[in-house]
Length: 240
Image (cartoon, rainbow, N blue to C red):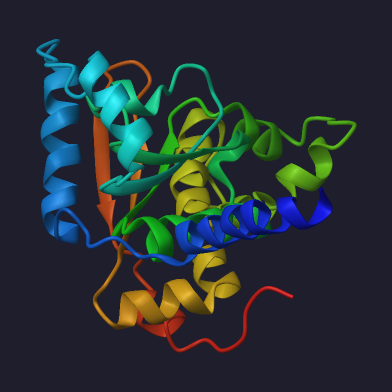
């Protein structure tokens, strides 16, 4: 009986390895993917959504043929930032990561790598948002407990830099600048932790951009590539 189980088990393992190793051809160029997100958000803001790829056929097709997302998005876990809705997309369109404060640590970097290398997603967006509770807590020095201190530790460098660069700034204005800085910080951390992402960007295979979602208007304000991207791409090493 044990011998009969060996072959089916080997097939399952082989199929799993192939699914992880294969790299689908991207459906769009990075710029085309970015434009698709921009158009989708414009529809969302104007309440003219078309709700693409949300029917039973799309569900069945992706279940049988697998996923081929055209973009990877790191966003906040905030319930006011529903990424597929914000960009008017459907099943299998986006490879989504959500974590409080849209921070990049080892888990997020590895998920980004999987999206780019194994799913063919060649646009990576780090999306911060207005009124972010995680960033606000760090700006205000609020007490946090449990596992939250380890989480917000990723936000501290951005807030520290923002305060140093803007010594007279306080309140909402300071928080808004810190939210932008935290978005840049998440991109910087992705480059620092992932030689794979650096190499794919240098090869023109992946584009990485930042953006800020306004929870009141629904509009995504695009920041573009990290202002220090050229220097970040020269880094060596990565996650350990």
